[in-house]
Structures are given as structure tokens and as C-alpha cells.
Length: 207
Image 1: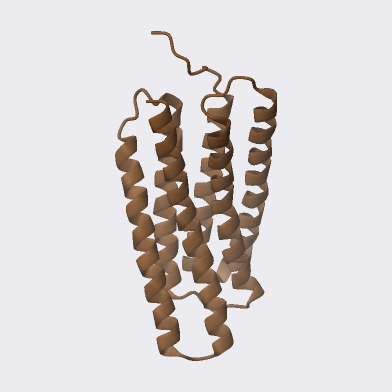
Image 2: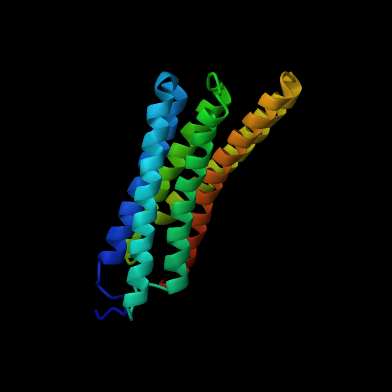
């Protein structure tokens, strides 16, 4: 059957590479929370992954400028890449603050949030990979539902962590530092949900 979807796989290869970088960044951030004695090395690795992600994004945008027929709407391609890059940027910003603010040790709340973030990134990567063949989505809709569920879990955990910060009191400056780190981590989870929304829109347009 004739398909209007071009078979050029370059965009999909780049999407998958960006998603892989996103997952590796989340994995490294989760390692920060559980292997804090090597925090500096993990943060440096995240910094490198952020540079790698920027390079992939630039390659996608260059490709858009050079390609007449794209796999789906140009706006969707651009938004998808920007949001994947955003996930990495938010993680990078949160991780850098752990060293910048001289955080002595991670909290259990951070450990829990990095676990949710990692699960969300892995599911997002799975969803991105399935864009290659929307005629056979292989459970893509359920994957998107699970990403939304994890965003809700992350939101609830973030609220609980912030409430605990203010309830426990302590050094106001440290409270402000942790509040920022928690919120950056939560924003990374939010960006995964944004990606899920973009993919749902692409599915509807190309059904």
C-alpha cells in the first residue's frame, strides 16, 4: 500500500539517539543520588551528555532546513527535539546545583524523584522509538498513559518533599537550595509528559 510517510530514516535515527542520551542522563542523575561519594564525576558525565544532546538537536534542526518532505509536521519535529533537550537541560541544572550549593548528602526524597524520572525517561524513549512505524504502534498509547501516571507521581512526591522541607525548618538557605533542586527535577519529569503529548498529537495527525 502506498504511504505518504517518507521512508527517510535519518530523523528517526536522530530521535532515537536523543532519547538514548536522555535516558543515560537520567541514569547518571539517579546514580548521583545513590552513589554520592562520586557526585563530582557523575555531574561531569551529565555535563558531557548535555553537550552531546545539543549536538543531536542541532543536527535535527539542520536536517529540517535541508529536507523538503519530513516524516511528520516540522513543528512537531522541532517541539519533540526541544522537549527531549529540555529533559537533559533540567537534569543538568539540578545536578550542577548539588555541587554548586555544596549539598552534603542526598535526601530520600531526591532518591525517589530520580527513580521516577528514570522510569519516565525510559518509557519516553520507548514511545519515541515507536514513532518509526505508527501503523504498528505496539502499545504506544499505553506507554503514553504510563508516562502521564508517572508525572502525577512525581508531582505528588515533589509536593510532599517541599512540605517536609518547610515542616522540618532548619537552615533557611538550605531549604531554598533543596527547593530549587526538587523543582528542577520535577520539571524534567514534566518535560517527559510534554513529549508524550507531542507524540499523541503526531499519532492523531498520522492515524
